[in-house]
Amino acid sequence: MRVPLKGIYASKKKLADGTRRTYYYLRGFGALKPQEGDEAEPFMPGTPAFMRAFHAAIQAPRIARTHGTLQAIIDGYQRSPQYLKLAPRTKLDYDAALLRISERFGNHPLSVIEDPKIRVRFLQWRDDRAKTSARQADAVLGVLRIILEWGRDRGLLMHNHATRPKKVYKADRADKLWLPPDIAALQEVAEPEIRLAFELALGTGQRKGDLLALPWTAYDGERIRLRQAKRNRMIDMPVTQSLKALLDAQPRVAKTILTRNGKPWGKVNFDHRWRETVVRAGRDGLHFHDLRGTACTILAQAGATPSEIAAMLGWTVSTVARMLDLYQAMTASLSDSAVAKLEARTAKLRNEVRNAPAPHTK
Image (cartoon, rainbow, N blue to C red; front, side, top):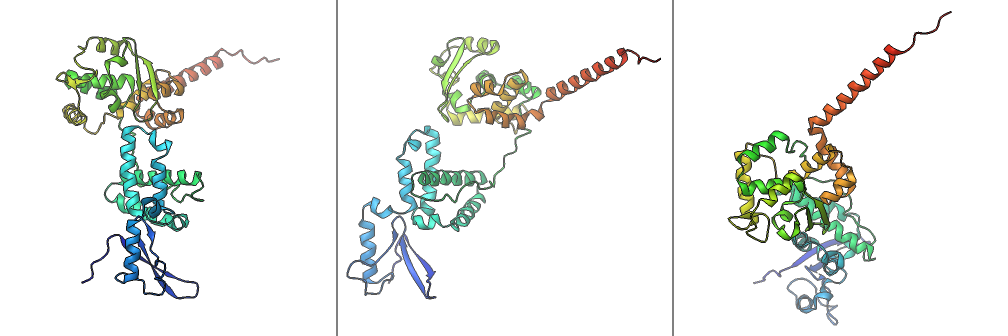
């Protein structure tokens, strides 16, 4: 009885002379070739020559097995400063994506990764994954693009065939803004512990993870200083008078500002309570993360420049501009202001015409 060898797959190719030949590959190693002295023997699964090559491959050191394959680039990237400086949560997401990339393309020789036709395989793989989760499929392909670019920068590849793909996931949250009625509705029904998290997010524009971990030592009574986990950016901002009053009234029962029953919030517990509160407020569909866009818009309405907003939220100026393009159309106050300015300009022109001296006639 012949037992299939794990990790072996065949690739049939047509040679220049028209003949067809089958090549065998071991996942995580590459092409299998006859050992010295076995060149004259038949080479296919089950033959003694093939089994000797197979056992030599699985016993070879990993660096030898992966040399010349995409796995070598993946391994190199995971040892690089670019990877090591990633935030812990980002690193976990990258690790999950790199594992999937390794399972699918890790054993591909770099010559195959260089072939322009590999882009079709990349996109087909992404599209197949998108049937389960379009967002995750785009994210994994994004990590593939990053590692290929890392390899190209170091001369390991000449081309990156995963650049600029059109995404299959499109998030349209233009109508997901916390407007004044939404804010009032949640404030009315929220428990004090949820209310504090809501006001802290609205007043600082920071991510949920950073706020749940925010210690009292980050607040000196006037300013909040924190380092964002995702981008490792340092944020130093004064708090508004209303937020200061709310924080100063809170008992310091734990190391973190946000607590549940005197203990730091757990992410799952917080998400559960938050969801209950949003539904109770009749605002199902609005997310905690939407408070960042809301804070951005409120700051813009108050006259803050994109650079000032970027300094507070930890974004780039270009990101602020994109967010304002997305969210500002939802705010009636901006259109009110625009029409008021138009009316003022029209009235001024009418007055100028009415008060203009009559034309001189002889």
